[in-house]
Length: 200
Image (cartoon, rainbow, N blue to C red; front, side, top):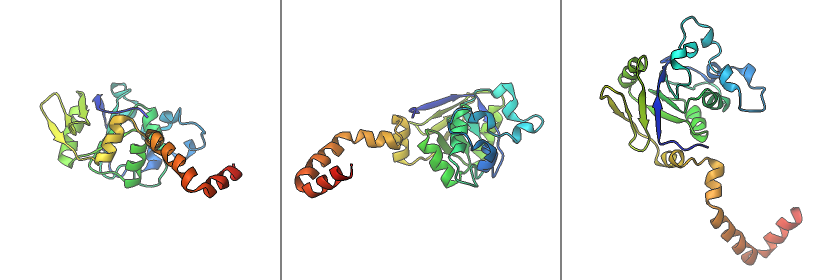
């Protein structure tokens, strides 16, 4: 996955609370066998509402989404993270997130930033006219108006996002240790090595 250190640009001032994964990507879009194109179905029902932010050209291609409390609740579908990525979103800011959504977002290279409601309200206002900067290294969100909000993040998640390491990448990074273990196992447990060779 792509590494993240800064996410800068316009932010979509959505702000709605309790948005579940069926709103992020409706079930009708789950039949696809590829992640590409899911952005078209993202927030499909919301896009039908007059004056919605998702069809406003002002926010086209915005890399940041500002949402309300309990974002990503509901089912555990990973397609929600895929849909956000496909529409160009790599950072979501909200007062809180569903644990499963937050995990899926992290595993797919999306930074979730939890901030107090008053900070989110301020960012929603700024997003209507100006860009926002999210600095993962410094764990801060800033605006052109000298606003600065700091956020907490698990150190392991921070490391993985900064380095662009998903689960496969983490495994590959341990390649030498895995080879050393396999070499040792052939000597110390030859019976196991024969069993594996037979199964293969």
